[in-house]
Every structure is written in C-alpha cells, then in structure tokens.
Image (cartoon, rainbow, N blue to C red; front, side, top):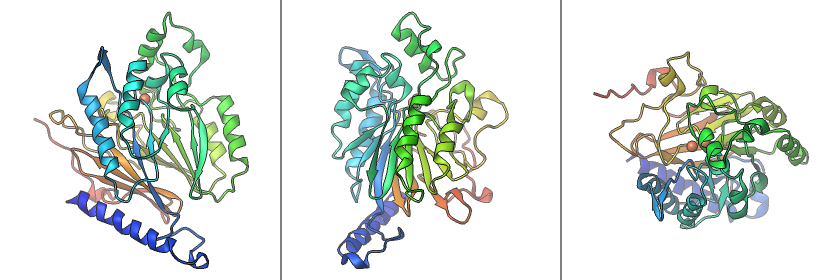
Length: 357
Ligand SMILES: [Fe+2]
Ligand SMILES: [Fe+2]
C-alpha cells in the first residue's frame, strides 16, 4: 500500500513539472521550489557483489538482487533522469564478474553513472573497470546541479605493493572485519582535481558528491572510514547545499556535518549489521541515524534494496525501497538544518527492534 502511495506522489510531481515546463519562459520560477521544472528524480543501485563460481555460474541470490533492482528502475514513473551504480558490482574484481554485471545493467532503459568500489578495484587496480565501465573520477552537470564522482577507495602505496599476487591483495581488501586491511583514501591528486573542478562553480549551486565509502569516519576496523575525509569536506565546505551519497555500508545510515548531508545507499546483495551491534563497543554510528531493524535471517531480501532520489530545491530526498522491510524517506529539514527520517526521526516514533526466536 505504502509503495502505491509513494508512486502516486511521484506521478503527481511529474505532471506538475511537465505542466510548469510548458509555461512561457518568463513565468517559470527562477528559484527552485515545489513544482519547479528543475526538480528531477534519479535512481541509485549499489553493492551487488556479483560472485563468479565457475564457467558461466554465478551466485544466484546476488544476481537476483541486481536483476530485481534493474526491473524496478525500468518501471519507475516518472522515469529517472539517470541511474547511478554505487560500486561493488563485482565480488573479487574478476573480468567475468564485471562483464556479467554490465550484461545485467544493460537491461536498464536509462543512462548509468558509475562509481567504483573496492571489490571492483583491487584485483587489477581499476584497469578493467576503466577499460570497460567508466573513468574512476569525473564530474557532470544536470539541471543546475553539479555532480562529482570520486574514487574514495584508494589506499597507501605501501599496502598495495605488499602482496605476493593481485588476488591476495583483493582478498585482503574484500573482508569486512579484517586486521590486514587498509583505510580508504581519496588522496592528494584527486583532492587537487576536485579543487580545480569546483573553482568555476558558484557557491549557491547544489553539489552532489557520489563516492563508494562514506566521506566521513564511522568505524575504522570495518573500513566504514575514509582516512582523508576531512580534507575533502573542507573543499566542499564553502558550498551552500552539499549532499554526499555513498554505498559500501549496506545499511540505512545518514549524517550531517556542517553544510554536508551524508546518505548511505542499500545493497542489493546482503545487509551489514551496525558496527555497535556486532562489536559491543560504544556506538560510533552518527546520532542522527535511526537504525533500521536488524535483518531477519529467514528472509534473504531483508535489509536489502535500492533508492529513488528526488532533487527538490537542490537537496536530495532519499526514498529507500526496501524489499522485506518498511520503505523509509530521508529529507533535508530546512529549519533543523539536517536530514530527517520523515516517519521515525522523533524518538517516540522509533521502530521497535524485531524479535527473533
Ligand atoms: Fe559492498
Ligand atoms: Fe565496498
């Protein structure tokens, strides 16, 4: 039922936008607001982790997650302006996995913007990705919004060159709770590029940055972490409306640091628990985040899904499409100056945790 209501809302918004677009130019509002033709929608699919077994065999559950998201994107109304894939298309960066992912994604009826994840990268340091999929970092403009894609999963050269084979390196970056891993970084070259890229952009232009790892620090032992995040944040700080969208954490997670709103995308493959629930350490998840229920292990799609993102007034409203759980909506609250969950932000309305027997 909930799904139908939100689809109707999208349809309504689309019609209003279409109507506004037919007005004589002089009557179209310059500033963004409700029913502004500049408002638009795009979709976000992330962390599919397609896993090659042998020959033409792949782990079917992960294939199905990506196929389901692709199918749902194809039925979106109004159509998304484009679809973003947020990284970790492959599990171990193998050519078979990347090719297989491209094949499934080719069924989308929309243009795709690609973000690279560590699982796509550390077998050959992004060589095949750049050849077949996309550059590792770039920017583009869309309806008055400046989008920036960063490769945030780089790390120290010493770590990269430490391993006896590319697969050993890949396997050591692929694990979640891994003492042999290494923190993610954007690194100086890209930070300099970002500074240059943003030089000509006016400070009131909405900026949407898309990276694989969160561009802030959550929990280092699991690499929910970008080592030089503060440097990137300081480049973004002068802009009035900044949203960072990231994958990697496979859960609902959001935060606000100064002018920057951070939103995590779901995985189509599996959920990660919140760090606190696993480590029994003090909670390092941002206070703002209303945790989603712990996934029910008897439902293989629980705590997985994808997102519909609406750009309204230069801010990103995130409609989490959760397959075995209640959809959630995150929206920037102008008065509060941060993101809020439209239904559950108020502590008295939080979702009680699921009980498993
Ligand atoms: Fe992932
Ligand atoms: Fe990842």
